[in-house]
Amino acid sequence: MPRQPRLDLAGVPQHIVQRGNDRQPCFFQDIDRVRYLDELRGICMRESCAVHAYVLMTNHVHLLITPSAQGQVTRVMQSLGRRYVRYVNDRYRRTGTLWEGRYKACLVDSESYLLRCYRYIELNPLRARMVNYPTNYPWSSFACNALGVADPLIRPHSSYLNLGGNADERCSAYRALVEQAITPDELDDIRLHIQRQHAYGTERFRAAIEAQLSRRVGPAKIGRPKKLPLPLESAH
Picture (cartoon, rainbow, N blue to C red):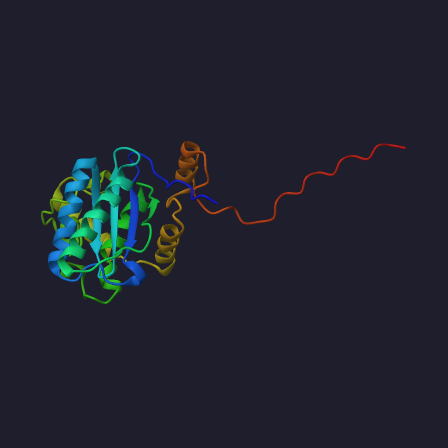
């Protein structure tokens, strides 16, 4: 059975995950991460995509991107993948693939769900026990979104801008959000949606996406199908 096209709409953010092949590292030195971010910035500028949050882990990456048109995210990831793999293979005298198949992506509701993804992405190093506080991990957007440190890659989403009237207020409000504990249910929910590539948001959000794409974008409803009424027997 052919794979269905990705869920992809102009102006709707996407949470993207790409892993190293067989969970192997995709970054070996800090210069590799610098190169990846430079390539990502240039390609996103060319494709008119806005990056809101990111984290580069040892063997995978998380990105939160809003495209201005359909097909842009796919072009970004394909171009980025080719360029970065060529760089790694040349630098480390290796051959073959670097990434594990296709990247995964899910559409994200731009209301409260989007900021949950911001927080989920930037807290990855903390959950992996690589650092004691996200500020101590230099390869994420946390310093930009929480502390106001300039990052040429980041373009804030309107949901983030609505956190306050100025940069200090927004950073303070975002830090307060990050300091709230992520519940196990929320972690599982985000992970399940990205794994199954379902739209992450309210029922209203999913219904709107389904209406635009004319396809199901979430899990099938659980339960027995309704029984059809039996035909009336003719009188004898």
